[in-house]
Image (spheres, rainbow, N blue to C red):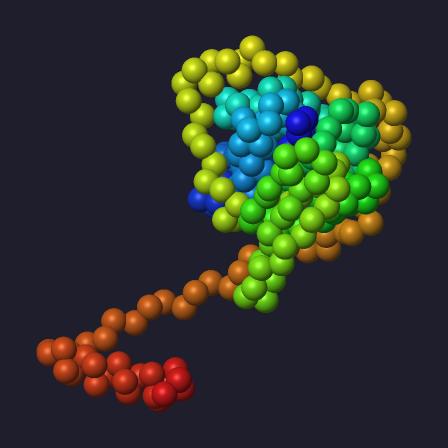
Amino acid sequence: MNIIVLLKQVPDTETQIKIAPDGKSIVTDDIKWIMNPYDEFGVEEALRIKEKFGGEVTVVGLGPKRVTESIRTALAMGADKGILITDDALEGSDSLAVAKAITAAVKDLDYDLIFTGQRGIDDDMGVVGASVAELLGIPNISLGIKVEISEDQKTVTVNRPVEGQTLVIESSLPALITAQKGLNEPRYASLPGIMKAKRKPLEEKSLADLGLDASEFGTEARKVKILELTPPPERAAGKIIEGETPQEKAAELARLLHEEAKVL
């Protein structure tokens, strides 16, 4: 089976995010960038299917040159080749524009299945996967936590959580599946895998290469515009419960919860 995995590069969850002076973006200096964790599940599932049925895994990323690092990570895990869509005109594009560029890059590839994360942990939109499926005219199954390919490789069965239960969906192939936590446990890249990744093909494509009009991308072309970013409110300082004995501290805690916190 030939499988495509779409990935996004996002700030590490341990990175301290600062709002830029324009109030609409973040400061990118000194940020550690990583592969979106939900996309890692997609890479791992693609590799497991490849190991069972054979075929090829192609990883597609979009963004500045640094996204190459995340694509190389997927190649080190075992993917076969990568495509980076990179163009200055893409800076500030919204999810729909991103989906349009990705669709242009993959529509002529030979694929049976497409994986991507159910959302990016940076903006939490969860739009790109469904949009790509719509633009390609293929089924989309979201929030997959179990994926099974039929022996004839013509259909896929996906489990997804819904209201505390499990929904089982069967679809013909090709299809696009967005990966959710619980689908698998992504492998670490081995040292031999890292060395091999340096020699695997990684193609770069601009908007012009994809036959797209640059004026349809970027901040000015956004359908969804960011008006303002605001940091979460600072947490109030903690309070230390005073008392000579555990009993005194427990009594004081109960009093504070009743009189100040109003939860008892």
